[in-house]
Amino acid sequence: MKKNTIKWRIFKYNIIAISVLLTLTTVVFNITIQSYIENDIKEQLSTIAQQVEDTALFRGPDFCLLRDCKNPVLCREGKTIFPGKAMNYSGSISS
Image (cartoon, rainbow, N blue to C red; front, side, top):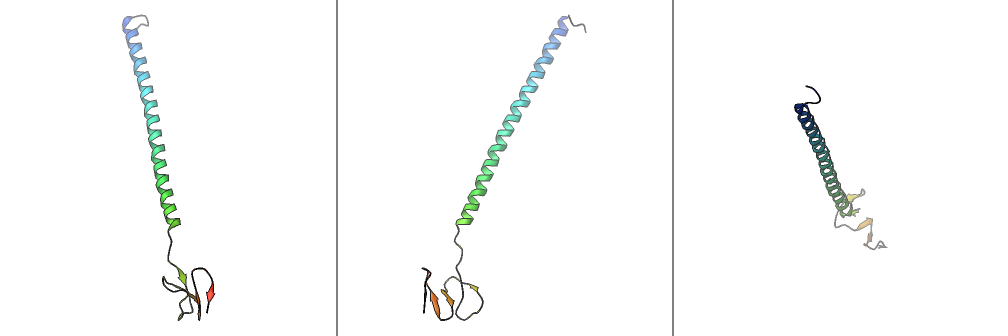
């Protein structure tokens, strides 16, 4: 085709229009995907942070020594740490 014909001019403008639309579609798609991924990552990090905070603030069972045992035993109700002496929750030891 010659560069001065009407067909060439129409073909040239169509190619330019298709190129511009393809470029615009690519840019908008990339911006949308980037925004979606950033929001998704923020939600995931927020969920993980909430789970870590809940785990850190969870109060586990009390550790103590039972009167009859010489080794530390996990118990919820025992309050003795030394044989014959009881320890209250304020931290003082009584006989």
